[in-house]
Amino acid sequence: LRIWDTPENREPMLGLLRSAVTNPRAARMLREFVSKALLSRVAPALGGDDAELRAALVGSQVIGLAIFRYVLEVEPLASAGEEELVAAVAPRFQEFISGDLA
Image 1: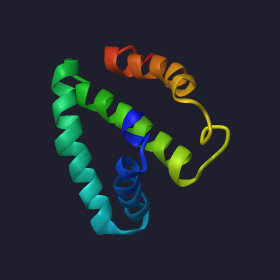
Image 2 (image 1 turned 90 degrees about the vertical axis):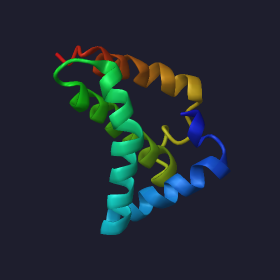
Image 3 (image 1 turned 60 degrees about the horizontal axis):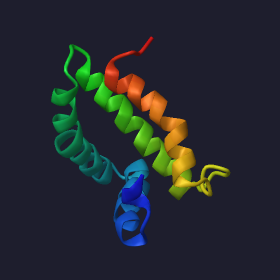
């Protein structure tokens, strides 16, 4: 969550998120960034047959959280503190990472 905390870090990614929803080129750029820069690095570290799926699930949660918090500004998510959000989402992220998807 810290990467989103300052406007200079947040604005470029939010611009891409906003554009990706309606612009195929922006969607492709975001998809390629997420796939190459993030998922391709995280999945091997997770291990297991479903590592790519689990890495993508984590990514989907991060992107969804960013859209709800910073683009749509849905309350109380938009004004929640960082520690509160981490406490709320960390257990689910841990389930994805550990492979405990049941």
